[in-house]
Length: 147
Image (cartoon, rainbow, N blue to C red; front, side, top):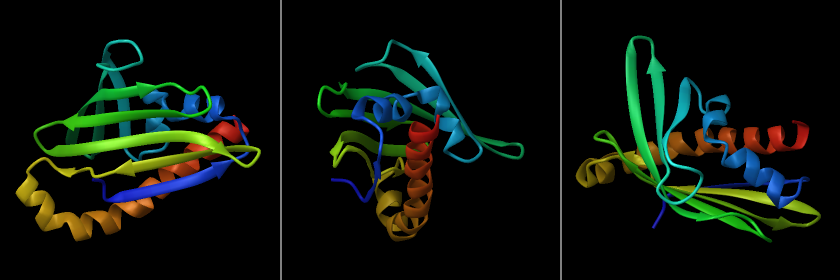
């Protein structure tokens, strides 16, 4: 189903970690060179986002739509599907109780939109994605804990 899974435990309650993980416009604090804006809709299924990553004069626009939205009671989960011409795949964010705090798990298969190209670059893409998503998840946990 997905290729990369990264998780990190936190000392904060599930609701606080969920708040940080689903603050889409705040994702630019965790993804390098990237800004995220909500294009349409309220939080929930059908909400559309666009992440723009800039490398000097180059810009990569990454359109996404929320396909699952289950805000936390005891746990919460949210799934995003990418629909851009260059990037495709899904990302699943899950927040659940862990010890006296919570855990954020980010699961993704994001890569080139073309299935053929995705299979070709999968091994290299996975190796580069693991440190990126570790950084993102750690940053979200750190922000949830320290404000």
